[in-house]
Length: 471
Ligand code: TRP
Ligand code: ZN
Image (spheres, rainbow, N blue to C red):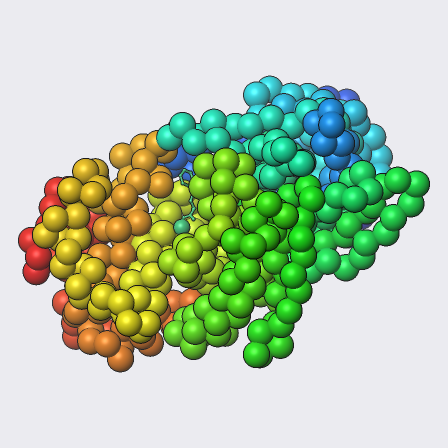
């Protein structure tokens, strides 16, 4: 539906009749524009300014050029979205960088910036349910963002290029967007780099073209993706391509200095993916792989969609962890950052299950060891319940990972092995390519296991303070 010409007269006549409409028509920054500004955040309990209200992104098209020598990034982001309210203005999240121009549906739009909020005022409003396209041209030297827990993310420069890490808020360092896990979208990313270097991103490589000393790589991620698991790696990489037994493309990019040490990685990935598909259900994406950079290039591994990022050669447990996130975290994505244990508890439990089925400790043994003396290794193990991290600085704390996995083990003890397997698989299926929160999870478990009593598991293990009774 067109939303240009009829708007102003409608708005004017509303003003004549309704005093209320005065506020609804304000905020256009030009002529009378109806609607109201979208919220500057989605009120995440830990990052209230993350994401934005009033629209849903369906697709990001990023056209970028990067110069490793200077650290300069030049970009055009074209964002397709659908309005969820009548909008006079809306925000995108972007940290640092200089904005050169913004259009909405091809027409110049007013914009201004305050902190991480880039506020866009389209020349005419956007009607609720209308689809629209925002184009942001920008450039600059993207920076790192320091997490509340002190870790570094955003845009990390490396010896031979750069690596982006987005969890929880790093992606706003390299492209404008609706940077909250609740708004997933498809992506197409084209990156032009000096010839000889490569650019690796999510999804599949659809083209690679060299002209005049530069190469442009186009990556397409068709399944919905949360922006914190978008990635871009620029550098000198050895590429190993293969396919899993089921025909899934595997694309592994390895820093050449680690070529020997990471020889096993391309063989381990298909083995883990096939095992995980057996346990968790069909793999949710159209390709897999990994990006293996040097040890110091990042402070942590991340489950970036399709192909996780590793600083240094991953061991098998870490590979299992990040690949399990493709089901739990990337396909089933938390509604808010408070639900982080739905990612980390599951990915940690995947490691326990892998060990149990590959000659290591049983999950029961892992649970018992953690319960009895886990606080010797993890002194914060009992410091807060997994579903209620103390603050944004605790989202990657031990209770989210280890005690989150213990919650799953308590469920397994309550329902038995067979029903537990069905739950793991069923949860991934029920919310495939969607979002879910802790209440969705507890409701799902109770519905699937009628007559079982989970009260103590929820009250003590999931939400309760302190060390729970073993139960
Ligand atoms: N989610 C990542 C993983 O489990 C780890 C991670 C992401 C992290 N962001 C972080 C760890 C910030 C510490 C701090 O694989
Ligand atoms: Zn994890």
